[in-house]
Length: 243
Picture (cartoon, rainbow, N blue to C red):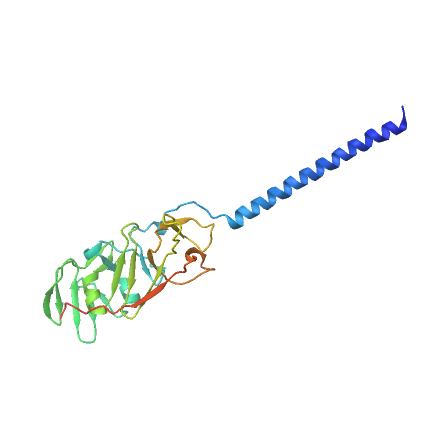
């Protein structure tokens, strides 16, 4: 056999191996870059419903979820006694002998018997629309007297049942979702965490207002070419009733 022919055939096979190697390397590198870009820059479209730890009617104060949920809804909403003590008045007490909740303010002493619509305000009877109740050994206070005595305010979500609690002196910050004039049908994802990979809790309409508890991350959820607007309102509820 001609040695020159052998060397030529061997060189061609070696050249083909190198070409295959570099092609494979290019494919691997391209796939790696593609996966990296997808993971870093492509937002997740996964939707997820908040479960609130299994609570049907969770209470939030200053963005923090309380241990116990509320019961009732709308005008009949009731808050657990420990939530009232923690965030509205630590001096509210429960008298087990009379099964009464006692509230003492600067100029009033209010005694609410559980399951009773008539309460005593400075030893005078006063009728409530909804009574205090005891459920599973937990006392719950109706929202109306809490509004009257402490200037409390609550906001309730029809979709999730979540209750947002505010007290007099708190400031509510409202944030409007981004506007895209050239894309009027575009929605803005409200995500679980400040990451484009976090699941979406809700799709907001452009200009829709949401309550802002604080800021985390880079705030890209609500950034837009036209910017966003933040408005604030200080809680100063009228003290009505229970006079």
